[in-house]
Each structure stands twice: as structure tokens, then as C-alpha cells.
Length: 97
Image (spheres, rainbow, N blue to C red):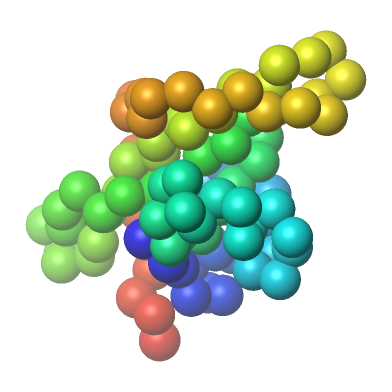
């Protein structure tokens, strides 16, 4: 799922991760593998968020999905693996307020 700038900011407020800029060369390599998403990097590796539903107030919710883990202690190489849902849930903000 592609997130708006507002949704990215709200997501990074909830998890310890940084969004990979859309113009980063790595994104062009990730899209054929995993699809057109907003990608995040954290201490565990590469992640995306996927919409799962809505709160009682009608706000969208998402689940963090891990796509690749760091292959080295210096965190310079990612090792892709099958998508792994985590137990981390995100409350997404509406695209506009």
C-alpha cells in the first residue's frame, strides 16, 4: 500500500522505522519483487504496511509486514524472504484532514 506523506509521518510516529524515499534507487528494485508500496527500514530489516480494516471510528488500520531481514551486523545487506506478518498494528490517519 502506498501511503501519503501524512500517513507516512503518522506511521513513523508509531514504529521505530524510516520511510525509504520514493526516489531512492532501491525502490525501483523493490517494486518488481514486492509491488508498489511505501517501504520502511528499521533495525530488523525491510517492511511495508497493509490495510487490515478500520477502527470503530472508521479510521483505517494496517499491519506491519516484514519482507527482508538484515543479512549482516552492519545492516548493509538485506536478505528477502516470504512476507511475514508481524503483530504490530498501525492506526492510519486519513489522507487529508
